[in-house]
Image 1 (cartoon, rainbow, N blue to C red):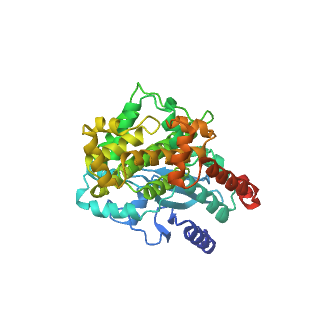
Image 2 (image 1 turned 45 degrees about the horizontal axis):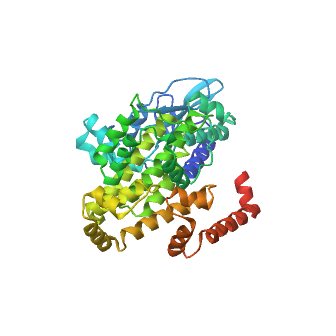
Image 3 (image 1 turned 120 degrees about the vertical axis):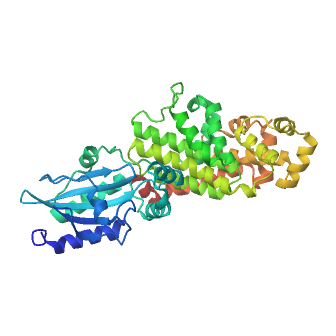
Length: 431
């Protein structure tokens, strides 16, 4: 096999792709024995006795058709096999993987270990999954196309490769920033046909209830009486991504309401949206969304020791959910069933500001998001947020921001004009 494979060029190609992408690469002979190993000493799955046994478990075929094929299993591991064909003869297989995408959540690993009765090796299995490179099927297939080109001088049409492997070929689109989605979704019930049920889902995040959130989410998704909005007319995949973006943005706010620091929550949200754009199948998006919900709930749960007392936490949640409605001390006192004066005292003691100030600050934060990410006029914004008039809105805005709303809008417009006039930025937009 060594002579026929021109091993020097194969070694170089596999080594370069492995070092560039961090994807494990193996070359197997026709009997599936490992001939070349570029896996960076990646441990094998502990359910097998060796790396060789793990690779032999993959369903490979002796074929003379040179074409990359994607393999996935119930453990979320994924591989791409490329038949090694020369002079119309099958000589072996080049194998890229294993990789995993998205990163398995703790609950997925626990459920997998329980289902397969692998409790005695739980630690080893978790360590194995945490060591796998997190790389999507889409990127894995792209790497296989590049490797095929280098080794065999075979130029595959990537769209055809993705199509044959049942990977949606829609190119990733630019996504809107999360704060814009949050503001639009909080105002518009079009995408929320059942706000009570969906509100309960996000309440689990706010409460840090990681045990029940996935059970409820799965049941919620399977309801026959609930119609999920279509956020893209062109593509079901794009629609699912947009719905997941909405889910992430609302989960971010729910986590903040549950006590997670806003910088941590928004950083997580941004990262999740970036990771989402690497997905190219609806099944992957569904698994990814479950992981996002669980991780947000888990973060809040870990942060519970730093939360306020229950009445104050309940006030925060109520303000978050009803930011576009009229809010007052009496409304909140009635909601948490406490005397208004007593609630006012403990709120000031725990939060460091009065309920009125906290409501004002929250509404101004929401106003800034609307000013930054929407086309609403200032009069529309203060009306949406239930300010009595523009003069009062301006007074409160300047109190917290140090600028009037018009001055702040001018700054936004100046920054936007600077961005649009920058040729480097423009080239990034168009490319």
